[in-house]
Length: 406
Image (tube, rainbow, N blue to C red; front, side):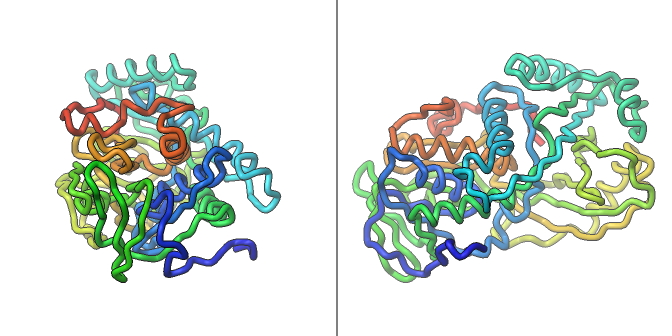
């Protein structure tokens, strides 16, 4: 860490802030950084997080992937900006020579369809993606086999792949520099738990900390990840967001593949990709309830029962593999439609949501942080219209349909 970085303090310096952000992981730090660099915003920023080590944050358990293979324009545009941001990271950081270029590996996503219904979904999605400039292409089983001989393709109808701005990037470094730069620009990061939110009519007036201290605020941003529903309830609001457990495995193969493995979404639901000199695989459990916020216990059987059989079938070279690391993390799962909720509450005008990413948070963080900062500064989105992802759809119970969910 550079000497110019301000240390995390444990008590706010002020009694009033223009913006209080609850949650200091990737989304909260994106909002803080975008606000702090905006010449039109001259207010004060306080970022609160109950654990500044981020040990159990979704950010710390991410697979650091990016894709444009979505089924609607706004999600494609969000990801396209994310890719552009990552490519030009140092420029966005003011061309600071201490800021590194972000590592990126464009091995792409490979969606595989084993039935005609999903194949048609992929065809339709590819046409949508291509219409917005994405490099996605539909591939027959023979074409897949020609480019990636290690796959079993006999049971496939087609695949959908994109080698342009899709794959892996170093989200951890991006997160680190957002925090550094936000602090350098004057944002305060405080290790503190929010225990209450004060309201007066249709406005939030402040937050109460576990210490008993109350901090006044002009705008509150809920960026609390899987705990977002608790932060909403403190203000008398409801959210369809809950923690869902997801499993990740790092493994070595006795017979390593001769080329990079795209992030492959198998029809079984298991996904796998290259991870440096090793491989990373993951899956959703077949029984997928909400879990406790502190439940990171691994399922002892899911690798042998679900992950490994799918890997060995799709890529026979993965018959002999050795798991070297494993962990469970949490999605901030939006039960309505598995898409982010960004924007103000429909009745509490200065309460802004950036929650419910359902696994897309890291790749969407550049655009969502920028959008939230625009809302706070100008009262509107100025670069990318994110209003289809607003809170009103929660009230109206109208899902924002996205068919490309992992």
